Length: 314
Image (cartoon, rainbow, N blue to C red; front, side):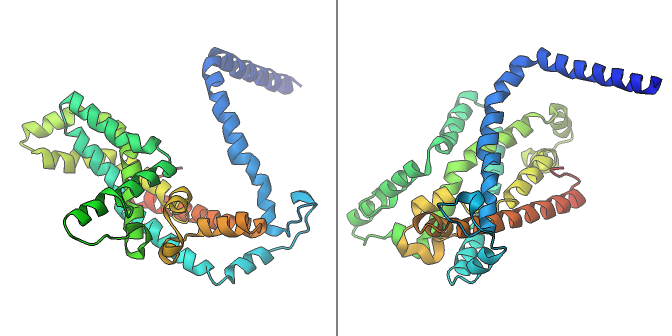
């Protein structure tokens, strides 16, 4: 009896402590509230629709009233002639983005870290951060103004007596254009994380290295890179967890029928069959399939990272 009373009193103290802590930091919790609500609405509420992947959707019956069909939707999408082609395009574009795009923010952060003139450094940072805040619709407008048939580049070719190059409709140029535009848009923004990691390095390490006669290259190789290695590992794991999603917004805005053979990815294919043809259950099945694979990749890369470098997401 006494034990139960003690346990009850401990729970009361714990509740009071938790409540008092919430009240103490109520302004912080209040600021978090819109983000929590938004996360719940846009990330958790749509999970209700996952059941569409296992149903034959009848509009009049709604999601809950539609009949279950098991894995028929998955079997159907795997048998589509176009599916494995767009799957191949997705993997190629994703790996190219990872190989060429992932190191760029690191290189940019290391270069910015070597700039000692504050005004010049801030100006460069502002310029490289700006594209991140521009939508892919506007980015396409900029790319068209540069590479379109009447764009700056083709006008230059015409002025020097050369023929125009159809950059936007030529399959040979599409994937390089996707990779370069992705780096242009996001490299500056991602470099913020590495700059924050660089700011946390103990300056006495550099002072000791200077006394020992180390030059800038040796300081970067033996102090800077090992110090930001956990940050690099974490961001690499997160990027690997998105390998099956090659960037819907970007591809949808940049591609056209002339480059479908190299640019059509699973997400844009799903958009065409799901939204324009009304096959919502097939589109849901494809998306679920991709996200399950992404989850497995994320877990696998996280385990490998923990074994190799000792750092991971969890």
